Length: 371
Ligand code: SF4
Image (cartoon, rainbow, N blue to C red; front, top):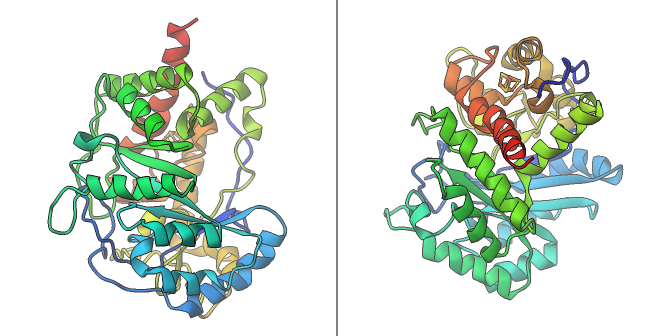
């Protein structure tokens, strides 16, 4: 399925749809596939950084839906008192989300989520045996602590999403995972094929048939009982429907969402949260500015002038002219290009094969098999 080359989507939008914030670099776990470079250090975000971000974000949120995603490290490792102080500058129109490993979630955290209307997303990779890579700093399995946190969420009626990393796609896994997440009680599920990123240098080259088969099987499992919003599959079906209706070019945003990530120290990295905290002899620290000295809106307005960002936009244009999947993908993620190709103006990566091209192929394979 190939739509005509999409014409829309040029450059970077001046206003994002969400901001990622790093309340602490610390994580209490030490998962084998984690990309975070500073996860053993507790570098906390000062309240002044949150105040500076809120000064830009509050007017944006008053004009439409806007989210702040608290992402770490493990955001709950910052503690309730500090996280409350970081949330305080944001106005009532801002939606707050946390991406958590759930191991610290207890009754008091559930009360916190309810009081601050924080939407929770839990990182868990499926049943116990599928979580072998999720371990504590002492190397012990974290699974029992994860499910204890999820049990607390359920006891308190806190709705939650789940995010699963799949390292080895194999027959039967997609069905096993989908059934597991139905039982777990999440209302949204995102599935990531493990990525080579940051300090995780393990290869993500996978057998094409295994990955396509994984996605096709996941669609089949979801269609039997579509109670969960399955992020990747719903995107794919929306795209397939738009291609058939001749409206695929309207799906991509007119401009790339800058997805600013505000690090613990106020530095702003656009487009890929995974680049925050890294430096490169050629590209420097990837930051486009710091909210402690420059308003976030001003940083975003000038972000295309950051040399690596300009190089990435060249890569997006190369994708537009060379890849049949551009209308679905929009040109991929900066961090995958950097960590796989060592530069930003390349095109195809293992990540886009696993999570864009084979995803769409898997959805189509399922459709062909069930005509
Ligand atoms: S990132 Fe990959 S899938 Fe996406 S448009 Fe570029 S080459 Fe295609």
